[in-house]
Length: 328
Picture (cartoon, rainbow, N blue to C red):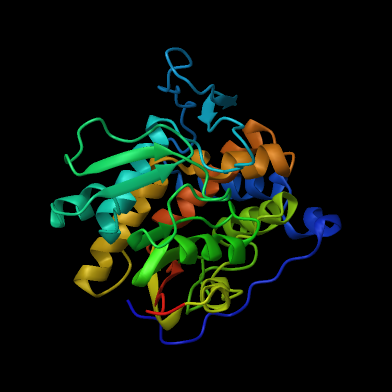
């Protein structure tokens, strides 16, 4: 649904205040116990840890394993926070279906006469792809290997928490883009919000964004891309013109009255429930010092809150696109 208000800036304290910003695990344990007593919820909210299906053998890259989950290798300077195993990939597949933004295979199918190149830091792409599509293992934070003025359309998405220098990123895109070509950037806010106060400061829904904001600070890779308006600012400074912005509110769960928005919200919830831990594990355990049990307790409470139709959470989503001048 299109946003009807300017996204509010989300701010957090510096690294010394992380403990005050994030609730202790006892907070989530108490909420779990209270709700179990009140509701006698028979649903098992803490599942067994998923086994990673990513093979550690027969691969040119050695993945890191954290609490039984695999993450991209420490190749070059790339530092990414989400798991890259089958469970996480299935979650992202649901996201692709929701937003119809899959930049590789869908684009290649729609434009069979175009050569389409997708890049990623992990070799997790599908085996069956259109003949005009190829994937490269590459790090977009390093100098791009594409020749200057060689690309008609550049699509980037879901890079929050993985880019130290957004201006440098858009400068590389500007260099590679043909004069008159377009660059498009899609990003989501890490913060879950509500218009009716159901996402409270003490809720697990609100805490979700804090993980990413504080984790991003520790990595030096911000997660407040929308809140800081980095896409538009850096795109303009890099030299792009005719910059357009589209803002949306994306529901989480089946609470919207509008049928289409309700369907989207149900798919978003399904994507998150597919792999809560794969999204938050790296930030929580590696950067903020949480144990796996603490992560599980938190995710159990988050699942309860998101399943409740009494709560009306959403996140902000922004698409920004701009054109390289014909003469630059």
